[in-house]
Length: 172
Length: 354
Image (cartoon, rainbow over all chains, first blue to last red; front, side, top):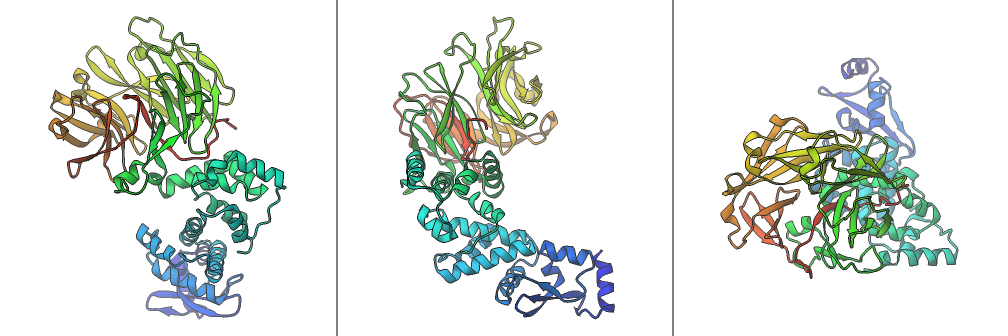
């Protein structure tokens, strides 16, 4: 399948670097990135486009800003072989989000999560959800509401009863 | 953080420890219903098994008080500051007078008998328990065999109990399915269950007991869906002279622990389930390795690094490294002496069988 796509690419004016084909991605805010096909196909969505021969011209990546797309590409480069990240690598990646309480880091993770979801990048999604889980596991219910921007829909009585029922989970 | 799509929120929550999730039930109503749902319990179990099965397992001890050990943390050298053992409150109102018996463990649920008549199905991670009707077995103090597992064909848990002694012509076997909590009798086809005792080992959707015929060891399996007893072959030289000490599992695979010739211990794993020729030796340990102990060890479980938890002298728990041929002792608080144990996973699965 990929042979057909490569042959087709030369006729449609797509760039190639050696034998590796380059794909052109355009972010929501108009930034353009050239990425090796072998790397970009870590995205199931992009791989589908390549397989269906729909990746011959610029691929618009709606909903993802240039800043986030650059982070995604950095992730792709780190995982070029396409192998699932090992534990050490995961820890390294997670350490970026050690200060996830910081609003700008939180925004980064949010943007990455949304991009990983939109582009369907299982390894990145796995990594980001793990990082968020790690960051929130010790949090209180109030901190959780703040973190995920959730309004409690319990009335006071309901919440008290529920808390009583699971009192042990609130103790250290 | 702005609103995330629901599937991402579910993914994140499925990675959290059970205790955290019990707390997060109070965040909002949608989270309460998500975390309480059997569907989410399944997602969480699957996630835990795929991502880090070793983080999720503990060894439950029917000691006084009840407790569980994080044997993986102990194996990783977490014996210092980190509390590797945790006490559990009794899932019955009154502290039991007699030994607590373990009937089985599956998907984070443990089935116990208190004072020989209260059959309790309990999730130690969520602390939720229910009492089940006792089986129609004359006296639970007598020798019986038992087991607990999941029947994938009817999507329900099954508890099995039976009486086994050589003198009995028709061994009585009873099965309880969790959704209707009713016991019904089943008839084993031959005398295969005449000599099996205690808790069955769960592997490949079947329970397994160590059986014996004349002087030979055998494995009797009970297929949880088909409800049939069958014999599983073990290597001929290990079947002789009651050389199998006990059964265990490594991952999903069935393992036997033997003392051939009474000079050393060997552990064998059945690589391909049901295939006699696939039994492969895992490790050998000389009987002299544990000189301080009078009685030989039984196999309890394996850690992710291939170390082995052994129960020795009917009172001590040790972590043995076949690679380094060294062992460490667990320090376990107990007022009773002998007690049973079983490995369980931390899960949200409800004993209410919804």
